[in-house]
Amino acid sequence: MLQHIPFPILPAPPSWFPGHMNQFKRQLPVLLKQTDVVLELRDARLPLTSINRTFEGALRKWRTERMNLAGDAANPIDLSAANGTRIACERIVVFSKRDLVPEWGIEPFRKAMTAKFPDQSCFFASWHRPKDIRSLSDLLINVAKRYPHMPELNVLVVGMPNVGKSTLLNALRNAGIRGPTPKALRTSSQPGLTRAVSTRLKLCLNPLVYAYDSPGVMLPFVGRGDRGAERGVKLALIAGIKEGLYDVEALATYLLYRLNVLNPIGAIFTWLAHLDPFTDRSGTEYPTSVPPPTNDITEFLDLLARRLNMLKRGGVPDCTRAAQWFVRWWRDEGGLIAASEAPAPPLPHSSTRRGWGFDLEWDINGAGAPETEEDVQRHMERHIDEYLTNLETEEGEVSSTQEKKRAKEEIMAKRAAKVKAKLASRRAGG
Image 1 (spheres, helix red, strand yellow):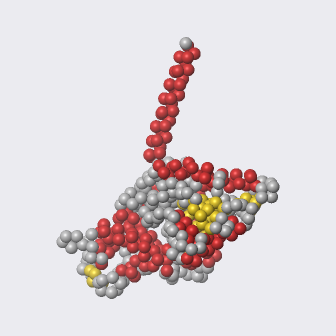
Image 2: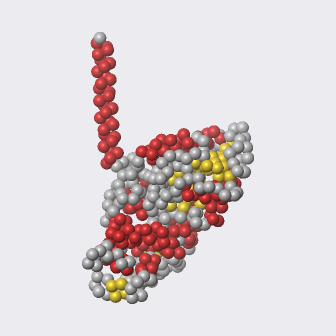
Image 3: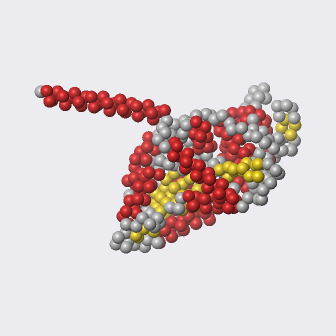
């Protein structure tokens, strides 16, 4: 078992914030004026990294305006206007792909989020589970039924790229309307397909529930240093960043590190034992046994390429193809395997690293009592606090590209001011 796993060297994150994302960011305050429920999608594998803080300002303003309209800021959910009319104003955070995270951490994380963000409702779902879709559909219908005076309930779906917004709306439409319902929105495994706000999509007939799909919006600036580099690689691993902006071997390096942290004798190496027999670079044969854990990406990709018979001329392992396969495997199959495993038992009389998803990890002592759900929740609450603290320190940070753009805008503004002053001087002298 790996006792010490060094953090890998990661590349600086690329900037990916195309024009349609900026356009939607400008449109958001106007769209919220006609919105009753915000359905914010995040990826359960990155429950903190997939929080899009570019939405926060507009969402806070939306809630404040609704509270002012209601004249009652004390009740964050059930708002009542001065004339007694109740106003819907709900923010539901849906963590998609719940089947790709271990079940034992879902309830502690939901409780931790509720404790830290009491104005938000948390819901975990997998689009492959019809029960989850029906439950979410029923949740929206029940919200609409609480406001019978409203002719319709309008839902706005927001989130980062590739968290499953369009797929979810197609599924909710199918669950809420009887009979065959054609697929209304195009979907893709690659980010950036939805580039504009959709027309209203009917999700239920009685009561009337409508929804708008929206483009996935990436962070304008992922961050500086190791923290920004890790955040960018995480988002690229879930295909939230456009393919090709990252070297695939950098993604494979971080993925191997993270899987080793979560369970160094778990999913990847156990799975490798079921492939065809192979021989590593030292000539050691592995017919059916589990290969030894490693955090050396070169050694691992060499091993993997041989197991998959991905060889170039002369029998040289094709490590680039192996890295591409490794990342795809984790997205499609490996995540399911890792999520289905029980957490690794702590080592006797020593500290063991435990994690949930790719955002939360903590140390447990093998000499202590087994962890309870309350213990896990406390660890998660601490991580949420650290995340919020880090956001405060990063407030106002911009990329070098944005710095250059701002500097250029300042120069242009100064030039325009000088021209304006000269014209005014000439008029005064004439």
